[in-house]
Length: 231
Image (tube, rainbow, N blue to C red):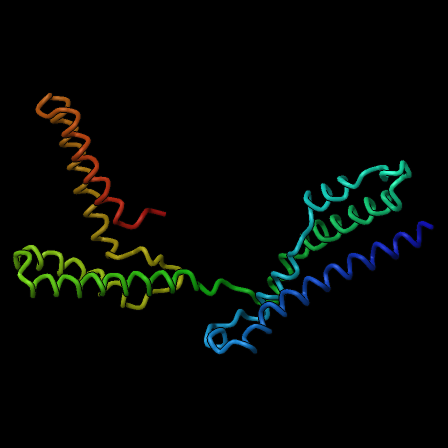
């Protein structure tokens, strides 16, 4: 009996793992066959799909579902196979959570899965397009004479600097949030801290009130937030 239960547990675990693989690879490779739009998108590498399929671990939800099975049927008889269902559920949880979990690190190495920095690339592209659109809008505003040339030129210079920084090639490990050089950021932070110390001193001397202090501090905080956050 015990051998039969072990064999059944192994079959159930194997089926669950295989179904997960079939589902993940099917979801990744079948839709592009029927959609030209999806074919134009970058396909997820098979190594990533395999890793996602392997980490389909079961845990508290599976156990809660098994424990929710009633002890008795409406006619008063015991629910057939309830104890076996609980045992198989525990085996599935153990196999997928413990065994699969312990193999994740060597599996990642074997598959050669590395960070492709897709999010960083997409963020850089989005920032670039947004800044270019804003710059084009400034040109339209200047052409319509809605604002002074000096005002537009000041903003144009700022956006041109951002666009220039976003267009330059950077190492993958460098954050896309770095829109200014390190020496510029360091100097800007020092200047902003001097501003902050000065307005605090003015408040302590009662030269300005709390409302004026908060407004100035808000502007300083916003200016500092635009700089790259230190690691």
